[in-house]
Image (cartoon, rainbow, N blue to C red; front, side):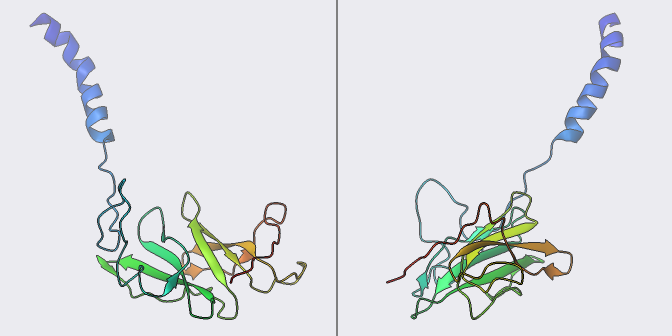
Length: 166
């Protein structure tokens, strides 16, 4: 009884810290698909995996509420599609607000914290950048009101290169 009297004040705070610190991991709804595993499977048939000529894997935001991917049309024009998850329902696929229908946009990828999306594109360079017409990496920030205007990623990292599609 004496040991319990002395240990209880020491153990109680530890129990409270431990009990309050544990948080269930957030479960992402992968468009109603089985979460990714070790075996390759067709992903989201007739939605992302369609008869169109896909060009990239889907890029899910870290919080699981947004997904973007690239689709090629019959002329090899690449465009991004986006879906958002709100109130337990996924939106229909649509071009993101920053899409440029005259440019090819490829390979979306979210930053670790999900505040930026990186993608490759042949879009026209903004004023102050050298125009080359080749593929560059672009960055677009996610704001409280939507996507900002894409800007070319650091030119010391993103060098132009020619890509030929058959």
